[in-house]
Image 1 (cartoon, rainbow, N blue to C red):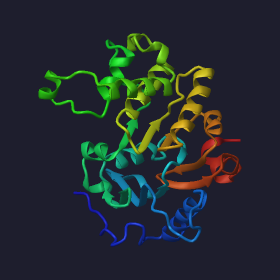
Image 2 (spheres, one colour):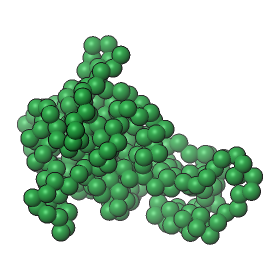
Image 3 (cartoon, rainbow, N blue to C red):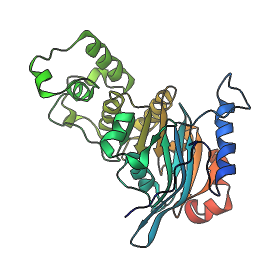
Length: 286
C-alpha cells in the first residue's frame, strides 16, 4: 500500500530537504511576473515536493521536487529511464507516489484524486502517439472534445450553438488546421495529427498541458511551427514539454529541467544546463 507524507498546513511551505531551493524558485516565479511584488510568494500552479515512486524496489522517482508557475512553459529533458513519464503519471493520477506532496492550484492534493477528477481540474495530457478519431473530420474531432454537456439525454436535442462554432473556428485557427477542417483526421500528416490532438486538449480548457515529445516524427517545418504553437499556448496556460530534440527545446526558449535517476539534476536556460558537466556525462555526451 502506498504511503503519503502528512499534508502541510500550508501547501506552499515544504517540510523536506528541498524547501530552500523550492522557496527560491517560487520567489523567482513571482519576480518574473510583471507588476508582481518581488517579496511576495505567488502560489505555483503545479507544486511537487519529495515525490518518490518505487516499482519492485526500483526508484523511478527519487525525492523529485518541481514547481511550475501560472502561464509558464518548462522543458523536461533527460536520458531514458530518468523518470519523465513517471512524473507525468503522478501528475495525472495514473501512478500514486510512495511519498511526497503534489498540489495543483494550491488546494488540490493530486495524490488523493483519480485520473478523471484530475482531468476535470484542468490538467490535460498529450502522449507521444497522437490519439484522434481517424474516421471523423478534423472539425468533428474538435467538436467532440469541447467542454460541453455531452450526456446521452442532452445529445438527443443537441444543436451546435453559435458559441461552439466560434470556439471551433478559434481552435482550428490556433492549431493551423482551419483549411483542413473538413478533411478526415486519418488523412492528416503525423504533425497535423499532433496539432489536432493539441487542439482537442485545448477544447477542454486546461490550465496545465503536459506534452510528451511533440516533435517526434515531424518534418523540420512542422517542428518549427509546433514550437511557435506551444509558445503561443503558454501565454495563457502552463505547459510542460518532455522532449529529446535539443533543437526543438532551443526553439521553445524556456527554462529547462534535467532529470536523472528520478531526481532533478540541473535547471536553467538550455545553454547553462548544456554546459553542466553532470548533464554532459549522463545525457548529452561529448
